[in-house]
Length: 261
Length: 313
Ligand SMILES: Cc1cc2nc3c(=O)[nH]c(=O)nc-3n(C[C@H](O)[C@H](O)[C@H](O)COP(=O)(O)OP(=O)(O)OC[C@H]3O[C@@H](n4cnc5c(N)ncnc54)[C@H](O)[C@@H]3O)c2cc1C
Ligand SMILES: Cc1cc2nc3c(=O)[nH]c(=O)nc-3n(C[C@H](O)[C@H](O)[C@H](O)COP(=O)(O)O)c2cc1C
Ligand code: FES
Image (tube, each protein chain N blue to C red):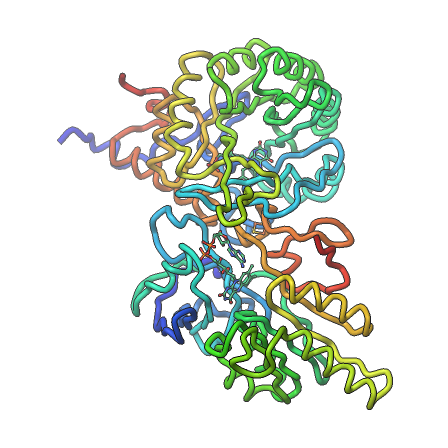
């Protein structure tokens, strides 16, 4: 019964107007061997005990140390507003860790994060210190949360913002394309696995890049979820072999299996 | 005070008989909210449940609707899963062996888009070792009758229930749609066609609009409302059906706590099913069973059957 537990809020820090970092104490008993989260896995968090919002919300594991779990989240609607109101000492209901994880890269790799997608990729950069080329895009400079933390774990960092307030102006996939073109002209048959988490348009673009370059690409997908454990079939994504559950067979998929709609 | 020493010592009887099944307690899982039992088995001992009602099955697999399939609403949710399922054959081969390991009745929920498909699914399920009863979901459109939902037209409903009844000896539970004017009439149709029990309610059709895009949020446009928001409607419908038929009722719709379950039992349900609440609390069913037992003990009631249909009006 260890994957469903109550945790105590240790900290719920505002990073800026939109982003917060939540730290919870899961207790010793719940973080036994089977319940150590792997990069890419997620938790369902319930932030209040009323019926509105009713459902738990999915959040990627951002960091874990001893008994504590950290989540980086963007305030969006009802559920994340409730989450942002949690105070130290509050009790929160949790299910997790859930879903699959990023297959561990064998050598250098590319991580591409759009916005809060960095939350899912940071633990990967952390366990593979200084072997990842990080491509990080966001709307503007103040939305590039955890840039210095992620940068410190990466081999090299490339940044793009929609408004040009930091890094290259434009979308992050353009930076990735020019990086790949440069490398290709230097090293023939150049291939690195790509790990991605971000908004759908970015992932769609990426599927073309991966296809054209023949590079392996793993994407973490988001879908509306009710149960998080594979029971409701609410969170499916279309793949070449039919609908698959993002919460169970995912959230990490091989990009070539995804049918974009 | 009024409590006799006897009632404090004895644990109350929770077992109920329904459609020829003896349940150790009246709490089941609602179809489509509990998969085929596997997903939730790590959170609880499935043997504690009154019964499992499995995810709806059709004779052949269904891929279901595009996404988004679910959207939250105040104290509820809409779903338009589109009855995605692995089909009866794969269920029997791959999912039943797991369910057979438990000492509780397994109720297979099934549906079709034609009478033939209903009959085919019912026949195949009836021959399977480990299926103890059938629950027939009639909230599906009939492809041979202008896609009218079977369970919203008494005549079409009569045809399909009669056809299935002829082909199975297993206890047959007909799951009623709430999207009708008079649910008592529909319950009577089920009873007259030989159903052993009725279950209600299925989800209530609803819609949520994304105002910026001026589009329905669900890819299917509409979906079925479930969760605490529907509970008062469900309790009222159980009460109406209780007055209309003699066969037992399985009540559901928004049950989240033991108190909710007791409302249904008092209104006339002999058993209850827990759906959406499983998503919020994976051990909801167990908490509800424990809560019902505590309530009976506190009230000095020795047998749950004493409160079933005990509503005072
Ligand atoms: C596997 C996974 C991991 C995630 N990890 C993170 C993370 O680490 N940090 C973070 O900030 N966000 C993450 N998200 C997105 C996060 O779950 C949504 O932002 C959140 O559910 C929004 O809830 P809300 O009530 O504030 O917003 P609303 O827009 O009010 O939500 C309404 C409904 O839509 C659903 N919903 C809305 N947006 C999303 C979305 N993008 N993905 C899934 N469901 C959504 C909600 O769960 C809710 O049911 C993740 C999503 C998934 C599927
Ligand atoms: C995600 C989801 C899937 C469902 N699938 C089925 C199904 O396959 N067959 C069926 O008869 N009812 C199905 N239902 C209806 C439930 O069994 C139940 O009747 C309804 O949700 C009301 O109960 P609740 O409010 O406790 O969820 C489904 C409900 C939900 C939320
Ligand atoms: S959220 Fe229920 S199956 Fe994935």
